[in-house]
Length: 191
Image (cartoon, rainbow, N blue to C red; front, side, top):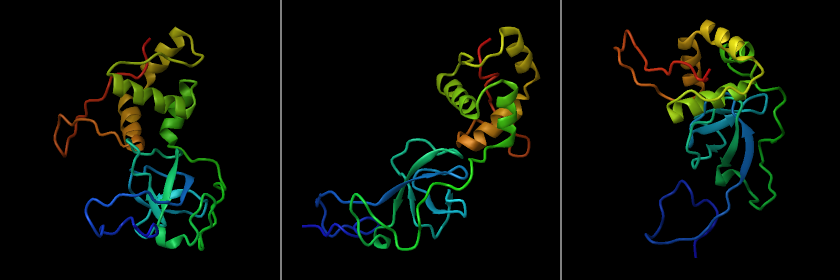
């Protein structure tokens, strides 16, 4: 029988052993872009940040990077949690909800405001546009003429470079290292 405490992060004793274990997890909010499996700690606001000596790792089973403001499961180091049950305590960290509202990318907040969308609606639309390879339906209150005007004023480079940084998506560079020319979509919304 496997000792179910302190198994992860160590080499298994015997190949073929299988079992299930308890891992203490807590729902946290990302203070910046975090990749699945990143070691994380908490900042003074109770938000997760990448930290080499953190208390655990970001959910390694997530398929996409975790954007600033998104919530995710933080898997805590097994040797730091003395009483792993479905209800547990951690000896050095008090897990309470973050003490401030999410802080989002200012450029994207401004673009979302100009398009009369929420930050999350803009982020989701950009993600779907990239995934599908085509602009997506606009879900905001602007008329078609107002939307066309707003999109004409939109700085495509700023939108996609900021979205790329926040989402962790890497666009192809058809230029050079010193003079990049990224293959950004034209606009995220169909008009």
